[in-house]
Image (tube, rainbow, N blue to C red; front, side, top):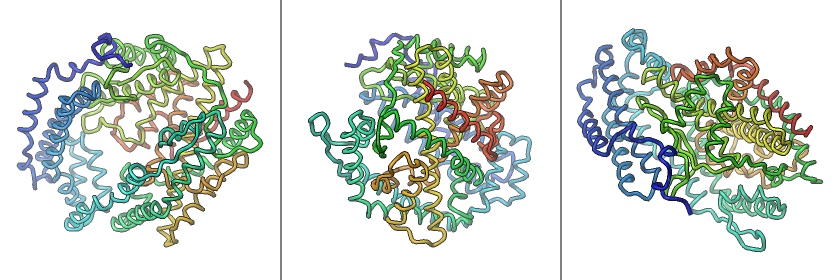
Length: 591
């Protein structure tokens, strides 16, 4: 049974008092923010630089306090989800956020409606330098903004447009006929979570039964799911054409300020690396002793778990040692996080599960939530979440408020860099071949699941949308054929592409947010390239990396990655990642 929070030592809890000293302080700030929500004095006057600056400063001021209120409420709620007082705080902060959004809703449409010359003058005005990137983005987007009347209609249709995702969510959760399989002589009902565990079972009969029954359930719903997904694609095509984009892909990437060639470069580069993936599966087949390796065999472990079994203090020490290549100032900040209440460590009754890092501009420091257990995976979780925290810490102290938040495109880079450096450290310092093989397997599986698998998903999305844009018929059969052919291409001859796998596209919720998953692949490719450079080049690469960590959202994510030596418009980063995969595969095979 989990211990109560009152039983946890204070040095293992995060210090929420660094945000608000008391509930009374929270209430006082809430009232102050509520009193500042009138922005009517600025409406209709944003073409004037002084007025725009005053408006943006007030928005930043209110947002700063509003974000502090929200973070405090959510952190207190996550300490103990059973506490209704903290649930109420969450609801109040959510309501305040909605009020602020409503009060400032005029800003973007008004700015977008300004003539290009006016926007260019505003972007060039020294007094508005904190907002120049935002204004330049508005200029880019202006060509795709429609008349006021049309924009009003489209905004009112947003719930309808989101309906396809909601339909899939209901099918996939509320209405899904979860199958039953036999495990250890007992009947067990599969869930989405337990399906993943079943595929990792050492018992092949369990894996096969889970795979076949799970997909049988999806196949029983395939007509409805197909209709939902085709509707979602057609919605993307409609919006792309209405907003005068060349393609759905161009529209999706424009919102992230990412060039289409990055997406296409990812796919073509991963294609060149597929022989390495095929070799990986040949090795797995041999290790598992299989005559034929099926899709239900590819997740089961080939290496016995080798747990580090460290208590938290020892685990933190190992993480700190592993991140030594990042230099003394990074080390000092890690120690500061440990000593000064950045981290909530232990699992307690009612505490939110999992792990995350959270920060907003203006806080004394970021925060990290853990539910630490003495496992190898949890040691890596410490490194991962501290990577997020350090990214936030440096960006928020180097950039003005408007430019401090980094985009999702780069959000996993710093966390993954930390994991890779930790793996390298453990491989270098351990004499335990069992642990080495386990770590190499962990690394290979990570790259396989993120770089290769997410690119397969990304390519499917691209091909499906392209078919719709060309007027080719989308049906369950055509979508299944596209996916099945891709599966054979990615997994090679050492894996049997079972007929059921043709339907895998039908169970991926991310597909209802088109062209999102590729960011997982570009993120890990970027992280590997950066980590390898830090490990091999030392100080110059570290300094470049710190420039990236400090860049926030001051430019497009592709341009910001260049600060760390990664150019996703070229092949170098992809080549470096493939080389790292090959090196790990060589080491793994040699053990």
